[in-house]
Image 1 (tube, rainbow, N blue to C red):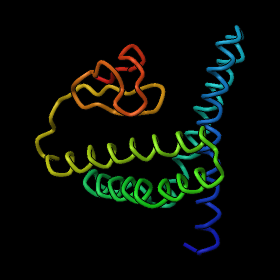
Image 2: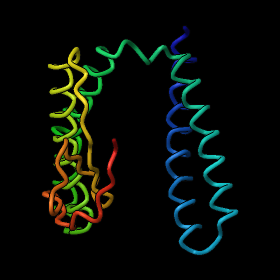
Image 3: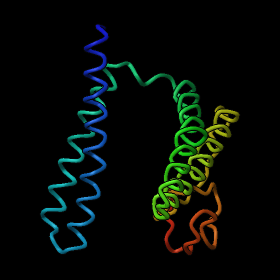
Length: 165
């Protein structure tokens, strides 16, 4: 594939992925404000954007075997936690922006946990261990098999966790 075309498809993928997430947030806000039909519209278009993003990934041949996907996901989490968020925390602290610093430092901590979960999965890929994951809906922390009384990253109570069985 031509390099320019590959870059254009990658940009389209990034735009579609961002749009899908943004529209999900818009749907939640519309629900909160009592606009169920608008929330539905945002969710429907978000789903459509996800389809566009998946088509772009297929064109880029960006989805490999499960083992390859695990390895790529692990490397990505380590890079984001170790490099990007570390720099972002320093930037926010230098700007004396406490909310941004908290967001970046908590996200870094959560990305470290994601990398650990991927590493464990890579080490045990053939076992296909069954577990329930619990995700903090405030900061994104993921607990493997145990619902904590409170989030170890942001401190919210267990009622703010969502179970994935």
